[in-house]
Length: 475
Ligand SMILES: [Zn+2]
Image: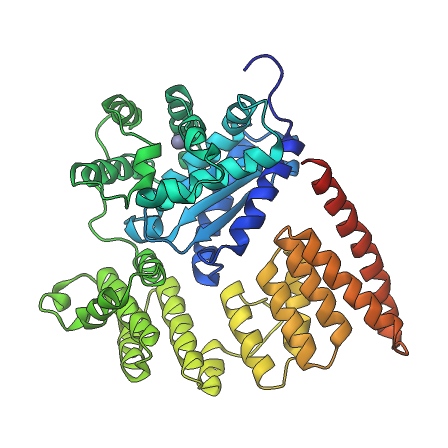
């Protein structure tokens, strides 16, 4: 440190890409449109706050990915990766009781990135090649997910030693708390979330830590850390903690719990929960959370009659709460779709309209319905519009590929599949798809629109090849 050997932003981003390329392929990686949108609704205001407060210099802003990868994992964990990538386990979303608590964790992790803590840690490993650094981080992640198997999953034994060295220092933790706390308030969150998150983690750590709280191992809660955060609370006492979570939060947290591989026994328990005594005495947000979990868990157990019944009760409970009612409608459509009732699903979501552009969860569901029904032309247009503003949305590219195929537009379909690979930083996969698209367009009498598409494909192929060469050089 201090010897000018910190990783440059560009090198750190490349290291991050090397790591997330593996994570995107991990069976636990999940791009759930509802959860991702909810997390983005917290993440984007925090990023904006970091810009306003001068914590995010334009160069870093531009170079880094600022992307969150969700992991279908029950453990409570969040971690910053090199290059502006963050990992967030569904277990953590499922355990927090407010947006503010989730914001406090994201603000803390964001501050590790903006303060270049990772680059400092990585620079301490200066004799390692980027390939080894990437393997070490992946090994440490695998170990944190599987504490009892840690030794078996290590990458060449190196990561065991590395894991301790990947932990941030106490000074770095203090700095991430302090700066993260400032971002929270600036972004409009209740800073009480920081304290209640600490309290929640502390409680959990008093119960025996059976490995389900890896976040606690990387973030030991010293009394000093807690006292420091409490001291930052405004004088005159804390605003009273809300006894009820907001309705949408209760529903989204329920979704995270159901999607985090809980196992059949828990799913069954959730299905029965609205029948339990005491349910009707709960406040509306909690009832909405319980019903959401019951409906989604029923659908996962393929009991669609029960899923539909819980979803209807959920519609009643959420009436009058705009965000809650929308989540209830999305869930009912998802259940109808899983049950094969596309007409009902489409009816719940409303018509495909370009203005206002539907939200991402609606858009992806509607595109699926339209494609299955052979009416994908409007979906193709809307997906294109969406992608113009979100060019790294792999799931939207994949939906576009499927929709174009159904429209008998194979060239556009192959290119969209290549773009999906690019978005997941799989440059070899992208080169493969773009080459396939070029071979396809060479071989047939081209359609006037295909000329434009073919020119784009040539450009994208060259870009993908050059990125692939850069990646090969860093080894
Ligand atoms: Zn930390």
